[in-house]
Image (cartoon, rainbow, N blue to C red):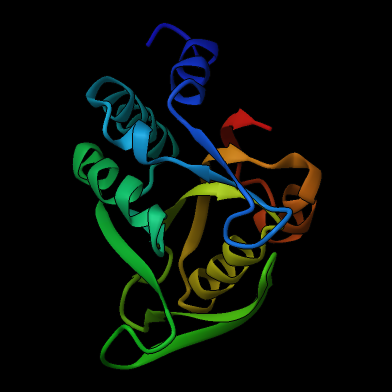
Length: 182
């Protein structure tokens, strides 16, 4: 891709709005058409991998579930490790847990306690930044493990929900970048 504007346009053209899903009044952003388009998917993965290298990340976190789809191939392409941050009860072993509020209620996410080495640089990748609850919880887990947040990369930001402001205190100097702003 020649520019971030070109990338945003390519990706936005492949995202489908689904009204009243998962509940009335919500417009769900369906990324399945984007994932099914080889050019758009490759461009997004290449962008995420390049950002990971630029930020010096040695691990990329993917947030369940759609964040896994983006983070795992980006980690591979960047030569970084992939760490899944999962919903409660999905990971074995010793875990760090973090409860959080999201746009439809509350939840708990977990990460294995040995997922990061102290001081390791970690990039968080997710598909959508809405209220910021899931990313905020992930940042707290990463910091609890003793790792450093290198940045947050999100495919699409729903700016009207205020997630960016919620994350600012945890990010410090680490960048938060979104490809598409809605």
